[in-house]
Length: 191
Image 1: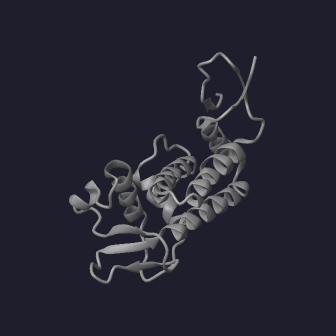
Image 2: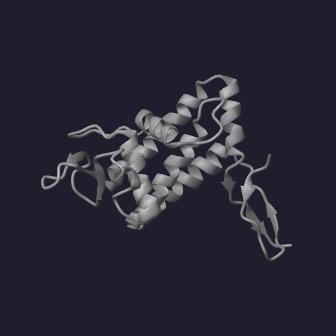
């Protein structure tokens, strides 16, 4: 299986990058692009990339025999790799609900909140302490500073790749196969 790629409609030839997919997809794709968007101050765009990145990396980390990603896969990966310190523990399901709220409604309340499956909502704050804290007015609202959350995710991706290096060959092959199913960008060369 080859990497999915952006196809030129102009007839120009495409030459694939020769880097390992961990570098081209994870490091240069998900992580670098998230870092660049954050540095431009595009907080909402950074959150969309962040939550999408959590989706992609949790998909890569699925256990053998798991065919499709799910909220449980997402929550398990986040709880293992996205380490947040503060006044409260943020669960993987709370971050999954925040992901759903942002990606589906561009807000903080997801269907999981409405249905009572997740009670606390996550508000993202720009600036302020790099921690997790309660909103003093609404204790059901968890506040997380955006750069702190992004850095925790990026650290989690790096820890995942270190763990991957120490895993058995069959699991590394499975992750590599999944990486090859992810989109990569090929360099366009003129004919």
